[in-house]
Length: 346
Picture 1 (cartoon, rainbow, N blue to C red):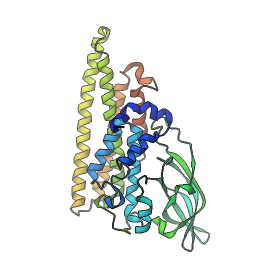
Picture 2: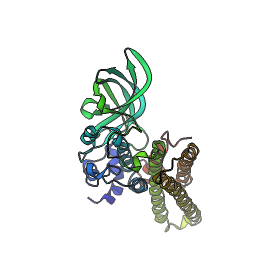
Picture 3: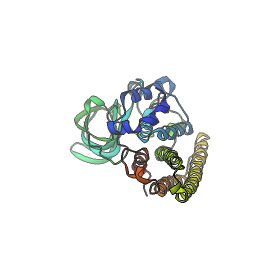
Picture 4: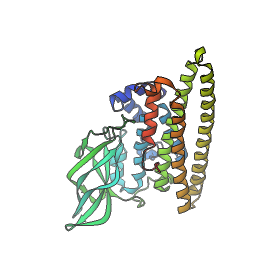
């Protein structure tokens, strides 16, 4: 199967509620969950801009597919934080992928040599095929809950998946709640961002995590918006031969051209700023708090503009716009859902 054929399978993907097995196999074959993984661990070891552009390209094929590639690759951020043996165990398999949550909605009871975990975590995209789950917990020490937060990695066979993802879009991302009850996690399978424990890291892994996540999710929104504009263009072309709509069609074509131009400017602005920050980081310059805040605000503004682009056109696209099984409606719902991520909302 050619990876570009995914574009034709959007409805099938949504109705199934998860990625079909042959598409998951395609991800493994093309190492799409390992874009920022060292080659020694079976990864592609891309630089930040290369990887983020892949996120956009995959999202332009299908929002669910792009979101899952992005989330799966996001787990690569933890590679340098685990000791060598644990890192190799988790990331070396060809099907290795992490799902999980950064919210500390569990308790880790401290015991000699590790922790006992109990809790549940929402919105763990890719839960159906994750090989490892990561989760944040507040530490409880000698019966007292502390303010300390510990990140833990847990094998999938110790995790219960609650199939409760019911969003209006990105329906196939398997962003379910997960639950563990009194699960033992050895000390060496816990980690903290910024604490390096092996040699498998790259410049991507030391890039500020918040900006990395914002760039990743925004690239998904850009890809879905690109897909939306392509589909809108197809629908407009289909109406060219209807003489009763000539005047209205001209107005829609003009608006579509305006929004295509607007989109290209947003895309250029994003990649220009990301490239600037990436080059600074590679040269060893630490990004300032002000620069990171500016990047964050830019991401929120561009995500909002992507939604505005889609909304400006959706009302002019007839019954396709409100038919759930139509491509344009599915893409619009996926965009709204992706842009609702906490990194991108006002």
